[in-house]
Image 1 (tube, rainbow, N blue to C red):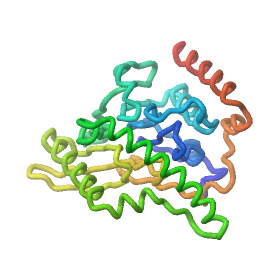
Image 2: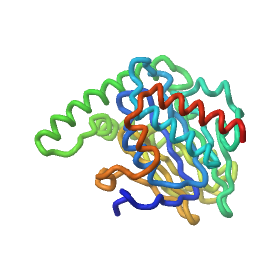
Image 3: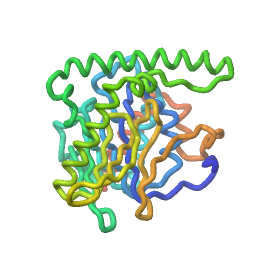
Length: 287
């Protein structure tokens, strides 16, 4: 169903992760379309929203600034927003427990959802590469970003020939046994620890692999959820009326721009949008 020109969908909770603002691979326009189409009560930003590892002063498109502005809009509208730190935005861990109004920077969140308990965290703590060879992980991230840039050129050529989009990095990850094993180990570790702590849901990001699956542990059932990313999969997790679903972006739903107040920012410069962000921040502090 097309979301263009329609009312915003009400959602009890939305989980967005691995946006990687500041990189060539970030699909900020698509994320903006999605963000503008929903009206959440709670928002979990589950890590790697801003990619501080690969941040370049020379590359910060207006669409990336608009994503930040829309997050501020949620905060000024009294939406409860948790920013969970990830590995690519780990610098923000210095500000853990900072809060203003209904916005808070945290390393993890435990929420009661109806009668069940949900544990939210990014997931990089399970990554052996992150723990022991951070320089190698950063090198890999740069190579990944370059692959995404090549991928965008390939897709332009593919579009000229009337073909669909191709994800080179996704094909590589899905074909490498080591990558598949890494994902399986990640999921098992998350589920085992969640079961030990009597959590019903464990909600992660980090591995760019959207999924909802329930596992039976020795003592209880644990549902593992991953919100995916906004580089390749363009996915988010939605919780509404006691049910989890994976949202998958479909460009056909957004053939026409959404009619929102934010549309005016399309014609503004980064500096103008930033000044509006400062005004929003002052408004939040005054509340």
